[in-house]
Image (tube, rainbow, N blue to C red):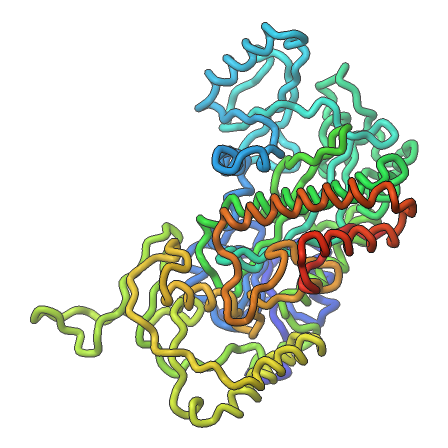
Length: 564
């Protein structure tokens, strides 16, 4: 392919997609995929739903997809509840950020028993529950009820205790929509965008009318059809959305230093939720997940996880949407190392692979394939069919370098530096050049290993498998990812390990790090909150310095905060 060939993006299966996404791709000089003659010459495939398993097996080094295999488990309400319930049993109250939940129809008897128990207690008749269908979105099928007799059973659903005392602004209920990008789960690497949206109900909140969805549900697709959507509401204005910057300014006057702490607790909630499914997600190259996390604050400023969206809406319904989503998409593509104009596909392609002597891959069910036999193909006098070589992105053991590369290390350094120039900033390139000057790292011949990706870092083969998943076909190294790209801030891992070490993989240790982070943030607010009177970015800088010192984190650590 020519260096000046345009970057091709593909939307769903029919070529249609969100208008704002199409606009951003056009601004970057990309072209829409036409699909003439059955050719698969596209660079980015953006799909609202999950991809079929076969798509991952045919992915080339210069192709990228916006979903990770098995990366949508936390996006089903019932699956999310089961994962968090399991993590709560293992790790305790640090996972106490989701309301009690019952799965229907399997746990209907438990729900009836709980309702009976609460009815016998004081004020038990006033408990409010919320019913949510498992496979619905945009507020469809959601309703509130007090008595089990009012509940309408139909498709599989979850029933949760309703958060009856949410934080209100001017009497209106709201929740927070946060955007999270996960380039890989093994090991987990996650970024969260500093800006986001607050979505308001369009009628004032009250428990005296639980059947009015415009008072209790904050879904934008629902509230924009409400009778008071276009009305200029007290403090809220017209429409039903704010930016996080506006929310910060509304909260800081009342809550002071606690407002800073709540954002750190939200960061911890997002990280803990991702860790809940990290162990069950296989390594994958050139794939990423783009989530929409919905967080609700109660009147004590405690954050609660409501749900996780697999494909958050990218429509431009109001000015707040354009203010947040348009730069967010541009910076997302910058974070992923996708070009601004033309692709220069010769630079996007990863290092050449002269030959592959062993490989191990898996299907969506986690079933490992058997490594290829020796060249003779014989064992015990019987012939064995040689397996077809898998695509490059499926190879999980680093192949050896050919002799021509081992004899010319300067050529390897030049090729690596040229590849890095295609997507990194000048500061990143400088650091990588200094790393390559210490000499090339020639991969050793692969060891024969018959183990799955669930084996962790138990052997050298599994470590090479994880390192292979960390390096994308365009040269991006997620085990050495940037702290911040635009307003995308890395929230996990908190810091980067040395070059010779793999990133943290053990979930137990990761949860312990998050717990330590939350405790340190509380101590910072308690110790510095009274001394710092300013309520602006100066206070944020003081808190960040104190948190960094308390955790003994270096410059690789970045505090996530919405802009002020």
